[in-house]
Image (cartoon, rainbow, N blue to C red; front, side):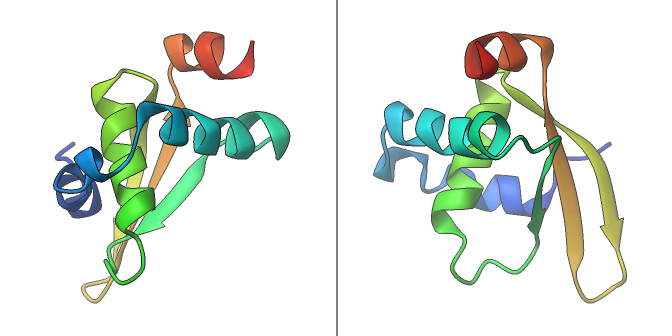
Length: 91
């Protein structure tokens, strides 16, 4: 499966935020709100932080891209915690 464009886009903004900000965001989503997965669409408008967080987490081995759908106008990608991500984020 090829990498979603939104993750590639997010790599350009990873340096704008700290790992602590990314980790806190993932903790809110997966631990506090008990999400099984997170979803990002391919519309880059207003998604700099979320795209950067996803790129950082993929590169850190905390999440993986498990599914993509594209209707020709918009792509939607979902991400789940890896085993290492569950240990790091949920413990």
